[in-house]
Structures are given as C-alpha cells and as structure tokens.
Length: 401
Image (cartoon, rainbow, N blue to C red; front, side, top):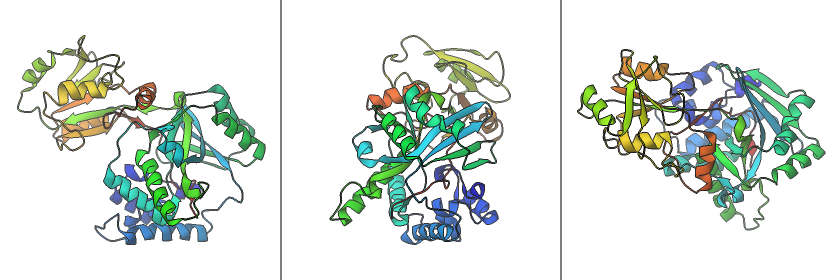
C-alpha cells in the first residue's frame, strides 16, 4: 500500500500532474500536499478552504487505516537506490530552535509567498507532511550507528517507484539503539539543508503562531520540531542545473562567440552532446548538433571566494548578465533551468525544438561547496543544485496533535 501513498515533493510537480495521478489513485499523498487537486478549475492554494481539505484528506487516510500512528517513539532508516548509487539516511524530527540558531544551516533565500503558503499548510493540517532534506559532514561513527540497521533488520517498506528509484524503510524502536544514534549525533557541529528551505522556514513560522496561542509553552511540544531526513554528505548525488536562453540579445552567434572569447577560452567540442568533465568547464549548444567548450581565463573569478568560484556564478556574472542582459535569473522570462538528472536530452530539445537560442551545460556543484557557503553565512545563486533521488512524501508524517 505504501507505494500507492508515497509521492514526489509537492514543489516538483504541477497541479495538473498531481490531479492526473490522484484520479488514478485516490490514496496518493498529493491529496494532502497539493489539496487544490480536489477542486475544479483554478483555486487559491493559500485559502483556508483548500488547506482544510488537506487536513480532511489526512484524517481520512488515518481513519481508513492506510496511515498508522506508531505506538512509541521511533527512528526510521531510509535507503534510496538508483542503479549503482545508494544513500542511507536517518528519518527523525529536528529542532526548530537549532534551525533558528543556525546550527542547521541554510544556503538559499526563501520567497515569502511560498513560505507563507507552506507555513499555513503546516498550521492548518497540524502536520509536517514533507521531510526537509538535510546533510552532515560525513562521520564514520555517526554513519555506522544507523547504516548498520540495514544489515541487522528486515525492512518495514521496500518498493520501487516509476522512475527507477528503490525506497527502503527500516523501523528503529529499540531504546538502546535510539540512544546510541542520538548520542552519536551530538558530536556533530552542524547540519546543513540540502533541499527543502521553504519547508524548514515554514516549520519555524508555524511554531511562532502556536507559541503565541500557548500560554504554557515549554519548548517540548511537537510543534518545536520538524520532520527531516539526514544523510552523510559524501553519500549524496548532486546533478547540475543547466540553463537555456531564448535569444542572444541582438547578437549573431558569431558575435556572441567573439564576446565570450574576451573572458573565456572557447573551442569546438570534441564530441556531441558535450557534458562538462570538470569544474569551471562549460558546454555551449547552438542547435543542430553544434557544441562548444568554454573555460574561464585567469583572473575572471576569485578562486578563494566560496560563491564567486561557483560555475553558476561565473556564468551569471560573465555571460548571462553582461552579454545576454539577464540580470535576475529568478524572474527573467528569457531563461529556463533544466536539471540534468537524465542527461542532456532536455537541453538539446529546448534549443532544437522549443525555440531557445543557446544552452549552457554545467558541471555539478560539489556538495562540499554547499557546506562551505553555508558555513560562511552566504547564499548560493538560484538553481545551483539538483539533488536526486528525491525523498518521497507520505511515507512518514509528523503530527503536531
């Protein structure tokens, strides 16, 4: 039954996609994370009416016995596998206080409108329905405390989704094992948000609302903690977020290439399609199988600055902004972002078939760079990383009641 419930994160599917899936499968958890799908036509996803439907649907899943409340405190161990890649993480609740004290560190800005909507969803459903994706600097002792569970126990759930990812869950209820895991994690200096910044911010916002309503607030209430899965950093798989642009800002291809050569070494690619093989190397695609390779010349960026040395920042500051006039990639309609988890096919199609003038293929941002930026209290440029496999929502829910 779990494979019928579990769904992708709410923010990587459209309303139309979620609605189509729910029509075929009434138990799918999009009815909780995307409750607008139970309404006809366009609706305000932030309205009380819509979000109350999420709570109603969650209560229905519990009443039906589809979702079951554990009778004692537990951890879960969560293994994700795709092909040769495997990563094992711990499912637990984490402190809102530690998030606000920046012991759980972020590297992205959040949008107020998205934060408001998710906070309201948490508050009205009285539940954290999607886990935050956390990581820590890999530590063999910490890793061992929960990774050993996969060898010692039979899984509670084990299923493969439609995208070739296998999801395996193990239940950890033994008090001694829980204590061992908890003590090991106390040795970590910090945790880092890999994905789910809006979910973490929403948990903090909703907590403040509950605190105001509770004159007897102690800090131990369930609303002081949020649901997350935490992985060692060196087990994660990060994919690049490529860019495609509608036009060359009035330049011909030849003029654009000449402009690029002022700051970059540019040459025809030795193979097509061309996926960069190292950091600071870019693939450029103009269509009809024509690929170039671009590398920055000396002095183009500061190699000691955590943000300035990122490939996404090098491209933004030296190409997208000054040459193509894209000052704000978050809002400019001329640029689109293409996660490369399944290769370069979508980038190629965008240029060959969808009217885009040029595509830029990047090398994946190293996970260590994310932690370096978070440690420095800095913010990464938008669409810098794509973590995959994605966590599923609906396998575990944290109830605030």
